[in-house]
Image (cartoon, rainbow, N blue to C red; front, side):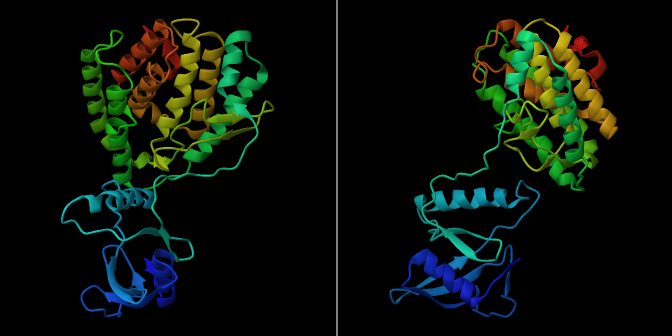
Length: 360
């Protein structure tokens, strides 16, 4: 709920419509009755009467109700309101939007003027992208620090995933997003590959999607696993400093989700780099892959992750096998990733210790 005062509303009117604007009155939409209006909440519109250069105006101030239909977070609701602000006036007979804004942490109503695009400013961190280490390993072999970096990442991720949340609807949403989002499995199938594609004909894509839908229903039974996640933990989103320290970038796709998604994302990148040398995982990259799983599972005791990880591997395999996102892969690398994701999807539980079974 939002605490409203006449002063805050008057400040908003002036910020939105200019210094010559002033609040005249406000209250319940039907009667201007202020009883019960001190706290302004979802689904409770507020009528504002104000003047600009002495001319009377009226407007209806409202916020969007949070719900389980993809509107759990304020950034979900912001996207809907931005869409309405941008498009409503273009439709004949539709109510005309007068302003768009947000409520800040102090309870002030802050207008946005003519929004066109948004940006974010982040701190500058020291370090370099972790994938440079993986390229070095391919060319010259592993050093002890490489193993320690993987252990440190696994320990950190286990700590992140230790924060749980009881919200089955949110877990179901994350699974729906995994399957049907434009950024995830079906979006990648449509947009990240040409059609037809000789390396992976449409018939295989259709079979893959059918298999993923079966997993969507299986995952209905795992809502208790909802936890804090990163959402996009790959070697281009990890900064290392060469001395054992690391930082992460670009948390994506929601604060909460299935922990196995993060586990799969980094694991499959060890497979990717290994496939450049052999059509199976071996040598240094197999060692890093095993350290990753060993350390994480020892820290979390989360063997159940192996029961749900398959569709997350499919998502990440589609990303790194995409000729649009990764155009320089040799054909054998893509074929190895395709074999892996199809074979993983067929089994009820991922056998991480025998990964090369999935490369056949």
